[in-house]
Amino acid sequence: MDRKSLSLSCLGVLPDIEQYFGINDGKSGLLQTVFICSYMFLAPVFGYLGDRYNRKMIMSVGIGFWSIVTLASSYTPKEYFWLLLLTRGLVGVGEASYSTIAPTIIADLYIKERRTQMLSVFYFAIPVGSGLGYIVGSKVDDLAGDWHWALRVTPALGLVAVVLLLFVVKEPKRGAIEARPEHTLQRTSWLGDMKALCRNPSFVLSTFGFTAVAFVTGSLALWAPAFLFRAAVFTEGRPPCVKGPCDTSDSLYFGIITVVSGILGVASGAEVSRRLRLRTPRADPLVCALGLLLSAPFLYLAIVFAQASPIATYVFIFLGETFLSMNWAIVADILLYVVVPTRRSTAEAFQIVLSHLLGDAGSPYLIGVVSDSLKQTDSYLWQFRSLQLSLLTCSFVAVGGGAFFLATALFIEKDRQRATNYAPSGERLNLELRFLRMSLR
Image (tube, rainbow, N blue to C red; front, side, top):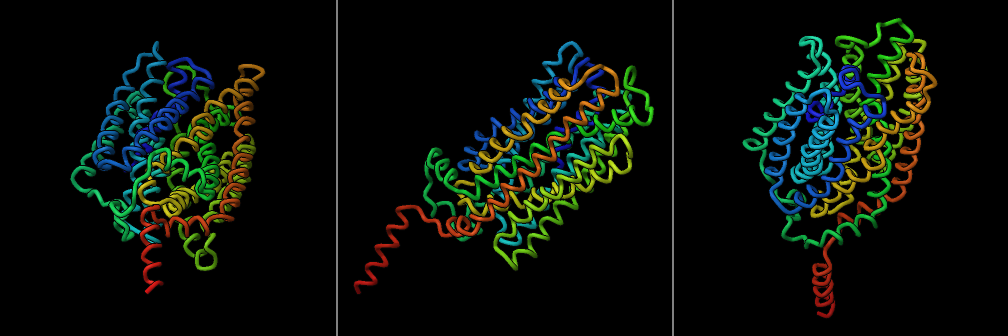
C-alpha cells in the first residue's frame, strides 16, 4: 500500500496551504511535527497490542480511521488552522498501527535472505508513497484549482488497503517460520522487554542512526518543495504565490525524484548488503553508514546550487535521496534479527518513538523556526536565503547518523548470535538439567 501518500498529499500543496491560512514557516513546520508526534506516542500502544493480539485486525482499524480523518481534514475552514493540526495528529493513528506491526508479520513469513527481499518490497512503499503524495497533491490541485481536493482523493487508497488486509492477508504464528513458535518462547513483561532492548547495543545504536535518517527525510519531506519554489521565484523570476493557486510544479518534480530515488536506493541497499554479507557479517550496518555518509555531500550541494542551477539542484537531490534510501529495509532487518520474536513489535515501537522524537517530529518545525529567525526582511530574497541556510543542518546530521551505524558494526555479530540462541530462563534450566543427567549416565 502507498501508505505515505495519505499523509504527505497535503505537503505537495504547502504554498497553497500557507496562503490559505496565512501562516509563516514556523506554523507550516507544525503540520509535519504534529503528525509525527501523534504517530510517535501511539507507536508503543500498537507495539504492545501487536505482540499480544491479532495484528491484521489492529492494522485494519487503524488504516480505516486514518482514511476517514484524512478526508475530514479537507473541510477545515481557513479560520481554524488548529483544526487542521488536530486532524493531522489523528492521521498518526494509522501510521502507528501499520508501521509498528507490518514488519513483524513479514518476519513471521520469511527468514534470512528471503526476508530481506520482502522487507525491501515493503519499504518501497515509503519513497513510492511519499512521491505519489506530492505528485497526486500537485496534479489534483492543478486540475481542480483547489488544494482541498488533494486530500479528498487519497483516502480511497486506505480503503483498498483495509479490504486487502481483511480478505487476503493471513495472520501467521509469531516465530513459527523460525521453528520457534510463540508458545515455546516465554513472554516477559513490557518493562522486562524494554530492559532487554536497552541492553542490546546493536538495536540502540542502529536506532540512533535511523534517527538521523528520520531527521533528514522529515525536513526534506516538508521543506524541499517549498525551498525549490522559493529558489525559482528568486533566481528565475517565477511569479510569487500571492493570489490564486500556487505553482506546484516543484512538488511534482520532487515527487518523481522521491519515487525513483527511493526505488533505486532501497533496491541497491539490499543488493549491496546481500553481496557484502559473503565477505563480512557486519555488512548491514556498514552499508547503512555508507548510505548516510554519501548522502551528506550531495544534499549539501543540492542546497547550495539552488541559487545557481536548478538542474544541478535536482540531480544532487536525486543522488542524496538515493543514498539516504539505502537504509530503510536494512535497518528493519537488523532489528528483526537482533531481537527475539516476542519482543519485535515492542522493539519496532521503541525505535519509532526514539527516532521520531529526536528526528522528524521536531526537524520540520526546527527548520522553520531557524528559517524565521534568520530572516532580515520579508523579501523573497530572505525567504529563500534563510530557508537555504536552515536546511544545511541536514547534511551534518547525516554524517552523525553514519557514525552511529559504524558503531553498530562493532556489536552486530554478538547481538545477532545472542538473539538466535535466546532461550527463556526456564528453558535454559531444563536444557542444563538434561545435559547434567546425560553426563552422569
